[in-house]
Length: 530
Picture 1 (cartoon, rainbow, N blue to C red):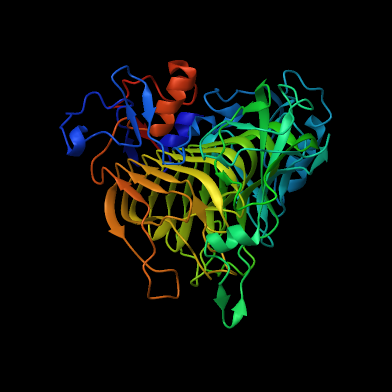
Picture 2: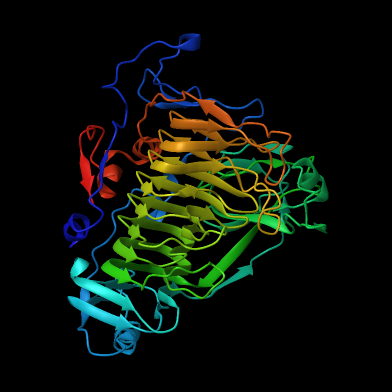
């Protein structure tokens, strides 16, 4: 079924680069470095990845924790338990009844079973919802089509509410500065915590920090715009505790400067219930009628996930939806997704074909064809890692983190030949989107243009990438030009060819690469056909 989806898809070939870059000629460049090496991450003489740090210890993070079950784990093939055939009229009730019947079955190894849609066209006028864990909705390849009809709606929802309860008080983090990319910090008293605890690490949003970021003076049409308020929180699991030193399972995507966030960052044990775990959507096509609409008008969308943990979207073709796929949750893989538009959305406000609103998200080998879109956008306060790996996006569009301080994005070996990759301050756009992204990396990409801007106290990097380098002021202003982020090895592909795969191999071994559809380091000439 997977091959069927690829062969009948966009027909685009992506030539993958060497994981280690050892086959490339190594020419010596400035400061004695090889031209195919980045000063920020490179493969050392021992074959290990070596990282440079800023003066305060920040580094490019290990992004390899993105994806299903934290990266490097093969997506399961779940046993079929119900098969649904197409009928005349609205097929939504039949499909929904099948899903609801499977929801009553017991779980085995975390799964209840797959609802399989037989070959044929399923006209659907309402959303299909997976609201219980352990259920997969599977088509029969491109022979299975969900044809969206009726009033505008989301074709498939994979979601359930999540309840979060605290399990103890907040404990102060005592470090004067925690650098981005680290997995450890010190607390005032660690006796309330044990290894395996799920914790919430919270950074207060203070007037001092907002002012430091230059986001306290946003005004649009004479009205003050509020960039961000409240708190920035990330979930982590405690890996080990040494005295009052805590080490967590996934590196932090942001820094924590105690001088700007008084009274300081905190950590608190939490317990989560509800949501959906171990669920997926795979091997089918979703078609909507052409929608020449603005994003403020009602429109058909394809997929939404919310409250999902350890889930996936695999080998799905999507046609003519608007704001096509929104991914919220944790440890989710979206792979071999193909989105196409035959008409562009109207207006200056653009929809996001891929919306990243969760943590540890991997978008692998995705393709999009369309105009006047954001190929990927991030939501407010989103903490990664979020990875775009070997994706190709064609048409007048952008990979552009969208609003209010997302952190930890990697755009890895991707192609945007007609559009741009923008790590930027969006200023008063929207309702004061301001600095949209920090600690983002474009690695070995090819794009028409890059707008790479450096937030105060943070970094964004464009490394080993080809395309026009732009510099601009904040939107609606002509000056001053904002400070550029880091450009390193511009126009020269660096080793490793894929940062995500290099990091994954180093952390989990070559088997992890094979688990997610890549062989070991010798895949230079492998081509993936859609």
